[in-house]
Image 1 (cartoon, rainbow, N blue to C red):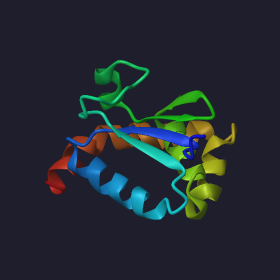
Image 2 (image 1 turned 135 degrees about the vertical axis):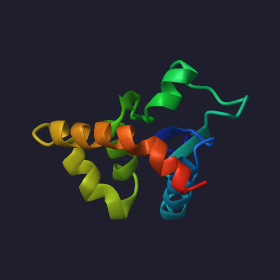
Image 3 (image 1 turned 90 degrees about the vertical axis):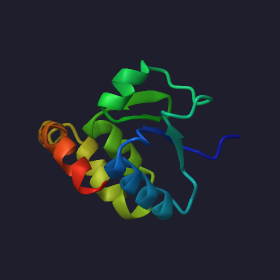
Image 4 (image 1 turned 45 degrees about the horizontal axis):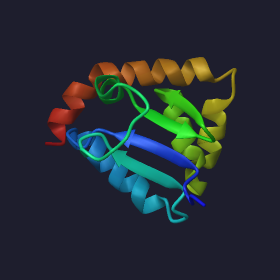
Length: 116
């Protein structure tokens, strides 16, 4: 039986992403998340690698999530962030979280340079 409830594909070439995933790994004390480095040649990903590198992807209970909803899936697997993950997955708030994620994507290149 697979102990992981969520699979997260991440960009290890991104300094910001590496820091965030390191924090999530530390907080994932229950080993509920399988973190897959998109630069690992042996890693399998159900989507195109370029698409996976452009936007955050996660799979929870067999369902693939993209962007803010992928973050919500990851958050739900970590007890301290579970309430935020539930809120982000709640239909009335989903557009707000999507808007925030799209805003993050616009500033991500500048943030990456700060963490190099």
